[in-house]
Image (tube, rainbow, N blue to C red; front, side):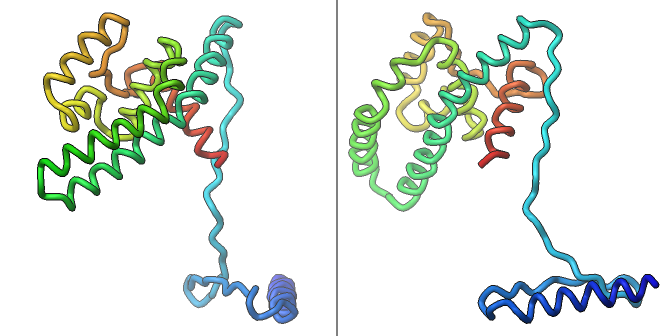
Length: 195
C-alpha cells in the first residue's frame, strides 16, 4: 500500500515536471539511505520569533521605544559598515599615503554633506544605540575606527567630547552580558529575518 502511494506521488511529480516549460524545470536533489533514494528540495531558512512577554506595561513601552530607535538608526549602521568596507578596499589598493589622505578627506566631506543633517537630528539615546550598532556591524568600536582612519588625537578628542554629552565611543556590543544589547540584537534579528 505504501509503495503504491509512493509510486503515485513520484508519477504526479514527473507528470507535473513534464508539463512545465523546459526553462522552469527544477531538478530535485536526492539522498540515498541504504537502498532507498529520497528526493529533497532545499528551502530558504525561516526565522520564527515568539511573541515577547513583558513583566509590566512600563517594560513593554521601554522595549517599543527601543525598537523605534533601533529602526531609525539601523540603516546608518549598515551604511557605515558598507562605507568601511569601501574604505578598506581603497586603502588596500593604494600605496601612497598622500593619495590616501586626500581621498579620505574628500570622502569625509561627501559623507558630511549626505549624513550630517540626519545625524544631528538623532536623540542622545539613538546616538548611543548607533554607537553599539556600528560596533555590531563592523566588529570594531567607534573609538578604534576613528583612531585607525583619522588619528589617535582625533579619537581621543571625540571620546572626550562624547563623554561630556553622555556617549562612550569605546562601548562594545555585548548581547550576552547586557540586557539592552540583547534586546537590540533580538530586534535586529527580527529586521534581518523580514528582509
